[in-house]
Length: 278
Length: 183
Image (cartoon, rainbow over all chains, first blue to last red):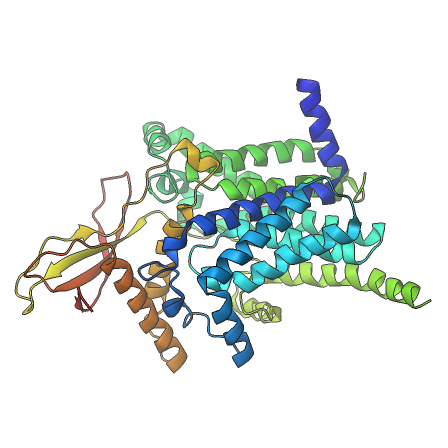
């Protein structure tokens, strides 16, 4: 069984663009299914009641406003998400046709832009990642050559490296991050934390600070893994993968794991200097 | 011939677009606000084209946002106690795989942030946005409160609290005007 898992992982890493598309499409699929079952957020009394939220995102032209109001009608919202789920299923499926995959990618990216204002409150970073992956994949495939697909892979990989680096460096001015208290304070919240984890972090404050500083150091230092032709990139990705899985469990950020890990073969390809089919 | 020419153009344009897009993203991560102008390149009006990678930075979310409400008599002389509008769901293993409720919890954060971070809304557009945010919250509370006879009004309070850490006092951010339970 272990060798089978290795085979699957190896195959995934050998096709960085297809892997990114597939796993990121899973993020879109999960996201659309979530929205479909949360109708209560959009009716009167919901925090995305379009009657009120439309004033938060006024369109610049009358046509754009009419389009947004149309998309915000519940049957249209549901239909869009249903069609997005289908497009995601196509990408997750085995089809290898470049045009079909390009169109499915473009559809996911385009409908995400269309529907973004409708779900104004409650979006998060995984939405940003999944949009980037699908639009980059669409563009790379639209170019029609191995070179443009490779450019898409490099772009996706570079964005993830930037994401970790920027996230780390942007934390440094924060007093709670520098002191090492940030982790226990985030974990104490009900929104982003976990009671069991918080209790243990409080019980072992030195370990909590060490863990906090370790996360900070790994994020800040992640771009360095691109050096030496990515000799340590696999180790770095394994650590960050563990970080995302822990976040899924303790912070409830399940879609982040799918979205970010979808880009890992692309990060590796960028570090090693290989192409879209290595 | 045409196909080849178009292919050649795309072959050059695509990597150039990626390069420009990446550079714009790098610049937009700079903490200096003047770099935010780069975000104007995003014409979708959604802000999704140029991602903000500065998660939980520089200051992470370390408190929960709570909307509380209390009922009031017509003359506002008597009130009920402050009650929770929405209870944040405790973490479960299932959330690692399927958690549609994540959206509303993040939405509470986003709405609270919108209200607290834009106190000096001066332009008509900003004022309208602020008023609509108040109406949104009032409808949100109205649909969740438990009415009582003799208390036709309600009032909302936005509070920050340190979650499972009970060593700190709640911080009161904003109290809203009185609204009718039956509009």
